[in-house]
Length: 345
Ligand SMILES: NC(=O)c1ccc[n+]([C@@H]2O[C@H](COP(=O)([O-])OP(=O)(O)OC[C@H]3O[C@@H](n4cnc5c(N)ncnc54)[C@H](O)[C@@H]3O)[C@@H](O)[C@H]2O)c1
Image (cartoon, rainbow, N blue to C red; front, side):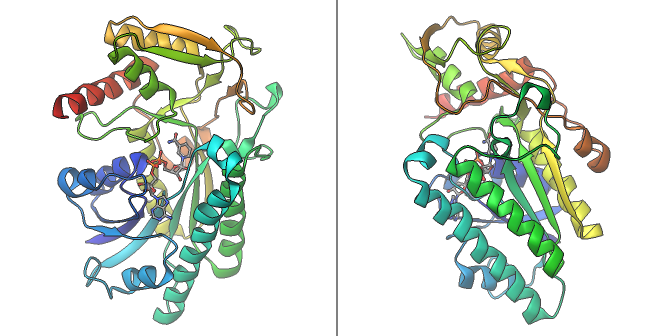
């Protein structure tokens, strides 16, 4: 069977992608240092091998790639998916070194291991799918919405810059070393698997939908709305929410493409529809049947008013067809996960 190394596979998007890889006939092996990941999800729910380590541990990577490691021995490694990163924008402003070391420096070591492996085996480098972000677009102008892959990239925080730097490196490595690369720029990942056994569980949580659900669940809970004076129809920020399983499916399509054509490809992954913060809160109230208090707060520095993708390129080239098109259906899956998780605890 074809094996895929999933770096950061114990996290939110990685764990959902493991399930889609399994559905697509691949055998995932997770590499995660568990700084933010969940061991139980990998071992008990998804039941795939977990290698605990850093994505930038070149020696470990070389062992995994060459099959000189118990979890990949005798396996045919077809690709690597690279989710492993820190992703808190605010933290990246306070402590940029943490982000450049973990996201950028570790990735350079991972790429080194991929190139060494290809040299040693005297064969072509193994394809890589990379998690990038709409944060690389920075603060787009009104005229630049919806966002195309060719839009100007001008990130406004170290997190976004660390991802853009990796994108540039991957493009250079593709040109120089023929490394097959797929760069996937996600908009707002949301929701949970329809089975309700895996979902979003960041600590700390900063994403809107889990925060709203958490607040709905708590007695006297409230949700803070950062900025009600944006130039949008209701004054709150507008974002493009894409279901995590749809994102996961795009990864499998992107991997298959670069396994076959060994190309460099870049895709925006979003639904192409924007919802305001107030619309998300109202949809969550409708799905859960609960009321929630709102606390209006000041704008957060660096939050663009609107971030909405134009995902047509991925739809056309990958034949990607997101199945969760409306906000309520996405929130419903997150709510189911939230209820089942709280029942289990
Ligand atoms: N969640 C989103 O909406 C979103 C949007 C755009 C881009 N992204 C990107 O997608 C990726 C996955 O996001 P997520 O929400 O699943 O995050 P997550 O924190 O849930 O998962 C990341 C995983 O990577 C692991 N990790 C971090 N650094 C590592 C290292 N050096 N070595 C090994 N493992 C390491 C963590 O332990 C964690 O399990 C990240 O690269 C993130 O920047 C996420």
